[in-house]
Length: 340
Image (cartoon, rainbow, N blue to C red; front, side):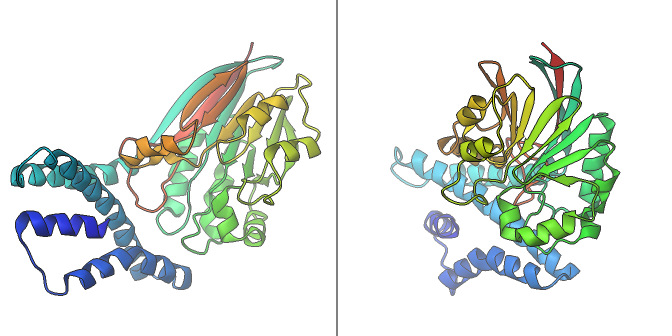
């Protein structure tokens, strides 16, 4: 991305910077260097360096997208269009500023879902992809908890990527989760695998939330199933295999499945899952990746319904990598389950 952006700038403006390719290489390496440093040194200066490097990745992505748009338009032109290039790259810079601001805001979104065989209404708060680490720490987590509690949920369900993996996480950083006003259950995402499951188990054992590792619990007559993310499960183990081993069958019991990556919904419905909760996609997080993510996932964000079964994919409560959102929002979701 850095090279494409620079070569276009070099051609359009006729610039020739000394050691140009070395400079491009250094800029491209900043995020990787910052990621390595944050795993070893927990110093304020290192965290600031990581924040700047991560933000730069988002800015470069938008500059790269603007460059691609310029090159596509230029196909029909006889020469360079300096005004168009300036306009597109200026828009990318302004979009970067807005994306930084937009990612700092949390929205609360509610849905009402009629559920067969439900004996009483149940308010479910769905959190996912908080990515506590270098960018999101105690202060952000306290904001998430406050917004979640304000919705007065009966149960809080977190579907993975609570840990970011960008920096070592200990129990004090996650302690604001103890302030959640409702029973809280957590299933893993791919980033818990990067963090290391032994460390995840040890850290969460000191908190007042329950880790569901291919396990079942019940809340107010609703069966809640937590399954490891597919990147943590053995390669030969599918969601269908796990649900079969847990004896999850379509017996009419309202069932909520916590499964980080929004895949294998058909298998979940085959086992009688009423509502599957997922995240992982971040709804693309930064445009135009908000469009490209649809090439990788059949279901990307929001509520889907099929044959009386629901799939909810959250756009994520935090961010990964660049602390930016363009075309997506950081979200706490409340699902009002009501008897059908």
